[in-house]
Length: 168
Figure 1 (cartoon, helix red, strand yellow):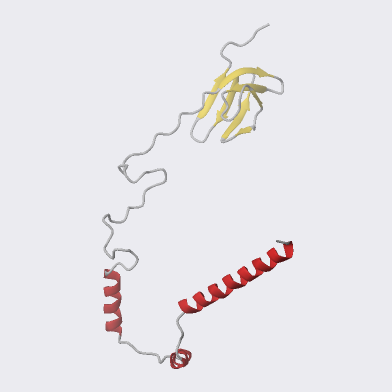
Figure 2 (tube, rainbow, N blue to C red):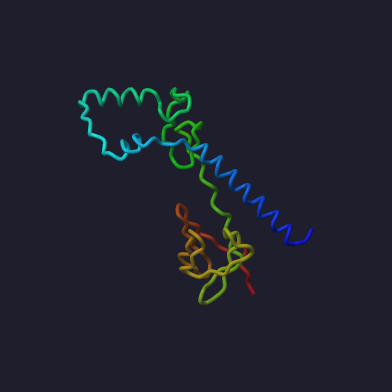
């Protein structure tokens, strides 16, 4: 078969599938009678319901749990609000322990102007050279003197010194 014949066969098959699909779709959608279509287009009349009947109807609908598939209440009640970091099974008096403060060490103090080499700084490997006012995450170096380094954290203040000062 030539290329032209194959193309013609494929076009005929496509046309057959198109007609078949259209006829099945038309059969699946029911025809609307003309009188029903005209009735839908007319504006419905507003019906006034007494307040008491409406509240009774609302209670009946709410009692039937309309948003649950089996229309019965959930086996468990609502979960009470828990503080951040708490799991629903934990007793309310439980407070998770605070993480321990980082183990900061002073390797050396150099200067003037005074600077210190700190080890054990969170998020840093090795020694970090710091001066007064340096910020390391939520830690702040308050002061660096010849013998001491004072570091302030959110809930702790470290007063660090070199373990064995080097002497010439």
